[in-house]
Amino acid sequence: MTNKQFSDVVEQYQRLVYTICYQMVQDHFEAQNLAQETFLSAYTHIDRCDPNELKPWLARIASNKARDYLKSAYARKVQLDSGEDSPERPAPPGTGPEDRILVREGVEKIRQAVLSLNEPYRKVSVLYFLEEKGTDEIAKALGRPQKTVQTQIYRAREQLRKVLKEGDRDG
Image 1 (cartoon, rainbow, N blue to C red):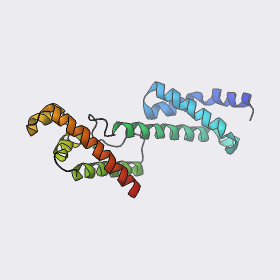
Image 2 (cartoon, one colour):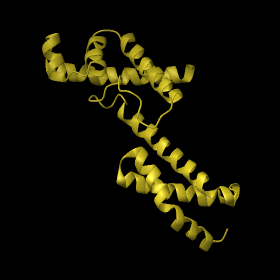
Image 3 (cartoon, rainbow, N blue to C red):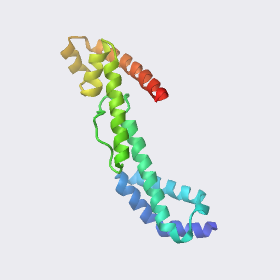
Image 4 (cartoon, helix red, strand yellow):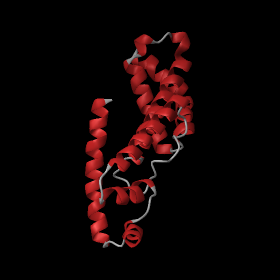
């Protein structure tokens, strides 16, 4: 396929690809980025596509790009670095049942890792990571200075990273 022919394909299907991406991610800027990624991927793999199947092939690439984006965005949100997001959050929209199972398994791994910590980190971690309490709330509940709670959360986070990394290597 020549560059001119591919430009015509982009012209013909750009609205379709953008619409698919936008419906899945609900963000205009990300949908534009994903549409560009879709056409870039299509251009590099155009030899794999039957010209009669171009429209469904582009739609599939677009939906896969959007789905991958949603998974990565969701993974960033539930990292232990963010104290404001709950690991109990449901799976992001656009993910299938098998993806939801993987998310649940990940949530369970995090919960088990938190419960495996020794004191004084376990109580602080349960309140912070699982129950989403603020440091001031935790300090009052446990009768500890807020600075102590912040330090314990920091150290617990480091321990959790190690536990979860080791679990990934084992599993």
